Length: 90
Image (cartoon, rainbow, N blue to C red; front, side):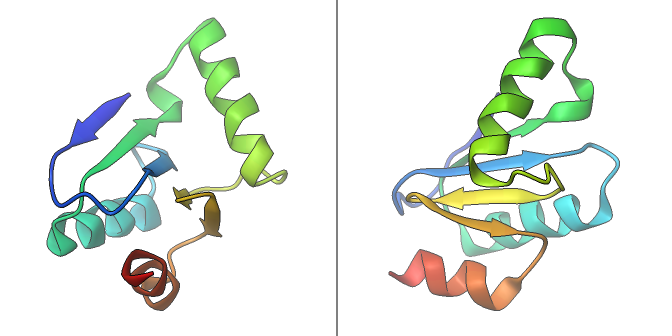
């Protein structure tokens, strides 16, 4: 798990892939907004760590597609700038 420091806007966690363009766009948006968040590049995990991350992700997104962003118990699947900004403003 990786941590990016910034303004506290609650609990923000991103399930991503290191090779995913939309995941990179989501990280960049969060960086540009200057928020504090955690993320994991699931494809870089091995064995049990990877299975645990996928199991946790499945709670929010049963299809296990990327990116999956969780903001204060609200999940956003895919890159949706408007929804992300709305969730962070709440």
